[in-house]
Every structure is written in C-alpha cells, then in structure tokens.
Amino acid sequence: MTEAPDDLLDDDAAARVAGVAPEGLDALVAQGALTPVEGEGARRFRRAEAEAIRHLGA
Image (tube, rainbow, N blue to C red):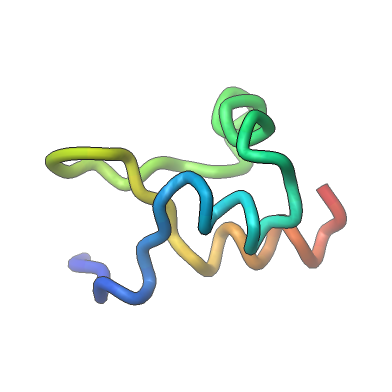
C-alpha cells in the first residue's frame, strides 16, 4: 500500500503526534508499537500509528 505524503511523519512530527519525546521513538520501535515505513532517506512513520499511541497514553 502506498502512503499519501501527509500520512507519513518524520521523527519530530511523529513524536509530537504520539505525545512522546523524540528520544522515545526508538523505544516505541523496539517494542513494536511504532513501525518505520521503508523507503529512501530518513525514516518515516504512519500518522495513524502515532495517533493511536497518543490515544493509548504511551
């Protein structure tokens, strides 16, 4: 499935949407709660996953 550009977030935006510090993204990835989208360049995250983390209270 191809993601729309607005649905993919960089590290800072994903952290802001998820409600965690940018340093916390690596822990969320390690736990399997947040999955980086494969592609060229910097890693990106799905907006829906970051929003779900915020709603769950990570």
